[in-house]
Image (cartoon, rainbow, N blue to C red; front, top):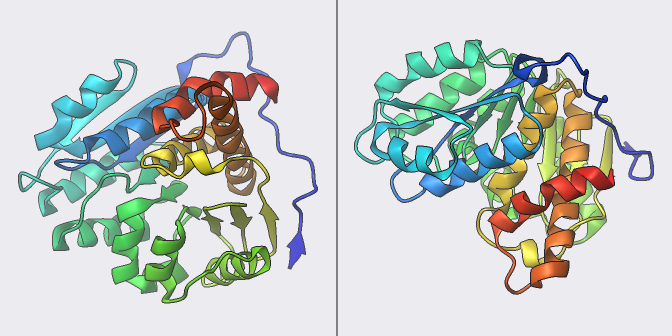
Length: 288
């Protein structure tokens, strides 16, 4: 497998002066639950700041008003819940919403329940748009690992080491060579080559079944709740704007870490929080 870390980063095309919001991608984010409404909201704000034209968040009705309160520029759809998480009747509306999206992101703040596990299994196995899967989306996939081998479209998995261990049963350690090999092995569970793994951590690894790259941006201040949710939104937005999935993942990881580095210069690593990354995304994109 080839290490392409030294290859130039992908680039977004310059914006067409005649472009409109439909020109830059429709992103559907699925997540949130009681007590974790902020997670999917961070993903939504990050997707907007990363250039997505239209962002919709599908979330349980019990937290829709909270999710909507974080930002006025994304849309929200409240669906069936059990007063905490999505309930089974939400699946058909979610599939309908996904059919109209250019990219779907699934998992931040989703919570865990038998109904959620079944919903994730259905979405993973049936949605034909590219999909970013994070957080409790990955935990649900870990309960139905057979879906990993037969996705109907591109799947970008973004586990941290704990989620990776639940997905695979293996610990990844901290050595770069071990982490790269682990990410490659998870990607190759999909013989179609449609799965990309973003193994988060110091030196985040982006891998598919042929190549991998180790990211050089980021700092320890980013080891705080919500930063992974921000990354989910960035990946989804870049893919929605037309970047091929591998390119979107690699560029998103770089920009995410760069925003963290810029934020740390201003607030320090100790005080860094996830919303700071969103605040510094514009500067990070300008530096590209």
